[in-house]
Amino acid sequence: MAGRKDDSLQSISVQLDGKNYSYWTYVMKNFLRRKSMWGYVTGVCVKPADIKAADYAKSLDTWEADNAKIITWINNSVTHSIGAQLAKYETAKQVWDHLSKLYTQSNFAKQYQLEADIRALRQRDMDIQDFYSAMSKLWDQLALTESSELQAFSAYVTHREEKRLVQFLMALRDDFEGLRGTILHHSPLPSVDLVVHELLAEEIRWSLHSL
Image (cartoon, rainbow, N blue to C red; front, side, top):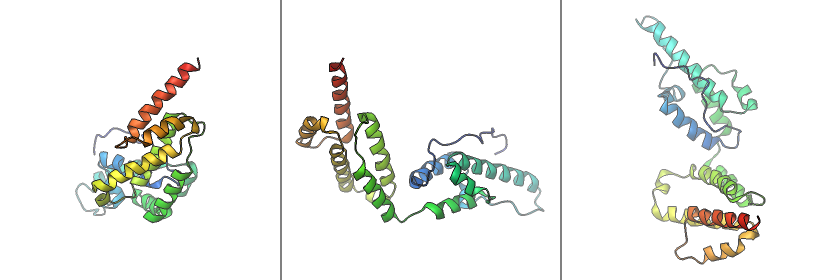
């Protein structure tokens, strides 16, 4: 840890807003593991307490510097209103535990909310790429609620991909009705990525015809 460059102002690409806790924890956990600092959050790396140890002062400085760095990273990746709640905590573990207690829901509650958000999402005035990105974000968060055993079950993964395709096609604007009907009659059904590729090509054709 000694000699480590000062990257305390670095932050992850996801900002916790209270609604995306599952995805935020996934990204932040991997970020901290990459920095070899996940143990500070889990409580494995505890604050040095043996004042008689020969390297006590150095170990304490290292621990306090890393602890402060993690708290800074977390503050840089949450909204201001959430960050304001964290000032009363002194350790990264306390901060993490507070956020977990505040935003962790049961898997069923999270699944219910995400399923509802997916059903409510419509393309409307979004282009295909933006719409696909919005839908993918919800799918990814929903996947985080699945057990590793379920994700390893090939029949379930196939069913999930077919379900995603139906959700995506149902939410498209009526402009794509012709292409949607053609896709639904494919056997076997194409992947969502392949469908997005076709829709992007169709979008380009429309833009060229409108010139």
